[in-house]
Image 1: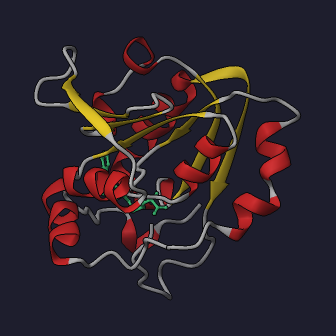
Image 2 (image 1 turned 45 degrees about the vertical axis):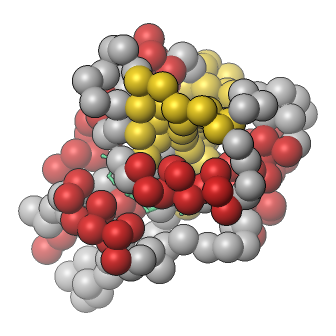
Length: 184
Ligand code: SAH
C-alpha cells in the first residue's frame, strides 16, 4: 500500500513511555472491543485452552476477558506502568521476575498463572523465550509499529504462531497523504 508521507515517521519508545506517564492514552478502552466479540469464534475456531498473544498489549481489558474464558494470555508491553495498571485495575495479584534471556526485561505474571506480561520491546522476543501461540489479538499493535519496522514485526509474528493459529488484526485503511492520523 502507499504509505506516502508516513514512511519516515517514527514514534520512539521514550515517546510511548511519556504518553503513559502523561495519561495520554486515548487508545485505551475500558470496554472490550466489539470486533473481538464479533469474531471470537474465528479466533477460537472451536478450540479451548488456547495460548493467545497480545503484541503491544498496553492494559487491554480483553486480556482479562479471554483469561476468564480459560485461555492463557501472553502480552508484551514496553511500559511497566501500563503492565502494573493492568493488574491493579483488575485487582489481580501478580509476581514479577527478570527474563534471563533479555537484559533489563521483566515478566509480570498473575498469581493464578494464566496471564504473563513481558515488559520489554517486542523486538527482543523470540519463540524460544515465549513459545508459539494458537491465536493473536492485534489491535493497536501493527498500526502502532513504525513503518520502518513493519517487515521485522511481520517476520517476528510469523515466527511466533503455530501452523493452525488464528490472527485477528484490527487495522485501518486510508490515504495517508490526506489524513494525518495517530495510527500508521
Ligand atoms: N493494544 C493495546 C495498546 C495499543 S497502543 C490496546 O488495544 O489498548 C500501543 C502500545 O504499544 C502502547 O502501550 C506502547 O507503550 C506499546 N509499545 C510501543 N512500542 C513497543 C515495543 N517496541 N514493544 C512493546 N510495546 C511497545
